[in-house]
Structures are given as structure tokens and as C-alpha cells.
Length: 136
Image 1 (cartoon, one colour):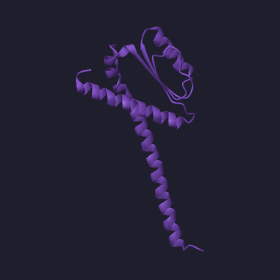
Image 2 (cartoon, helix red, strand yellow):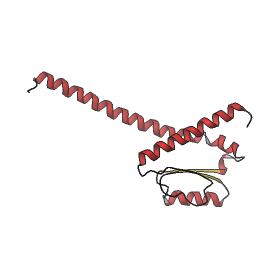
Image 3 (tube, one colour):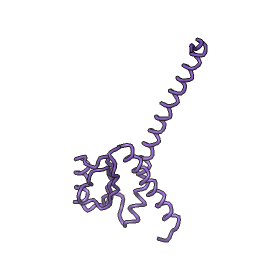
Image 4 (cartoon, helix red, strand yellow):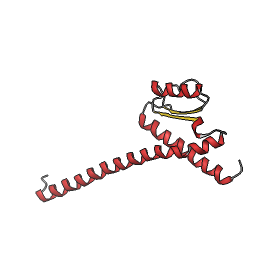
């Protein structure tokens, strides 16, 4: 069955719109994901207060794999300096000496990232609940 040239042009235009919208949605989703990780830094003061520490006393590491030697070195140095260490890692074992670990047992980096996003959203929400309660 042949398609008239006008119908073919209309379909091509609709396809281009759909493709543009898909790229735009993907870009906006990535941007909001990056913003979420940035917002995570606002949780640190409340976590510090809950653990009786100051902000410089906490080291937070986010590593999709968990086996990055730079992250391991940073967490080891932080632990050696007596800092409270928190790691959000992927499927590999977290570095030794980390106080609190959120590990995601998945080889898919997208699942790891989404689990990390969910974990710090829960942490953010819990901080707000405790701050609003005024009695802990």
C-alpha cells in the first residue's frame, strides 16, 4: 500500500517532533538527576547534627561501582582522620573502614544510580521529619 506524499510528510514531521521530545525529556531527566545529587549536600548538616559531628567531620562518597581507587583512598584517609564516613556504592564491596554503606547489588549502572537517588531522598525526608519533630 502506497502512502501519498502529503501523508508521508506529515508522518515524518510527527516522527521528528516525537524524536525531539524524547531527546528533550532525556536531557531534562538527566539535568534533574544531576540537580538531585547537588541537593544531597544540603542533607549533610542535619546528618552531622544527628551524629554529634560538624560538617567537616563527615565524608560522603558516591561511587556507582564502589571500586574506584580514588574513592577508596579518600574514604580511607577520612576514616584515618576520624571522620564519619558514608558511602553509596554499587555492586562491588565497599572499602574497609566505612561507617555506613548503602550498597546496590546490580551490575546495571542505571539501577545503581536510581537506588542512590532513592536512598538520599529517603535520607532527606527523614531529616525533615526529625527536624520538624524537634524531639529526637
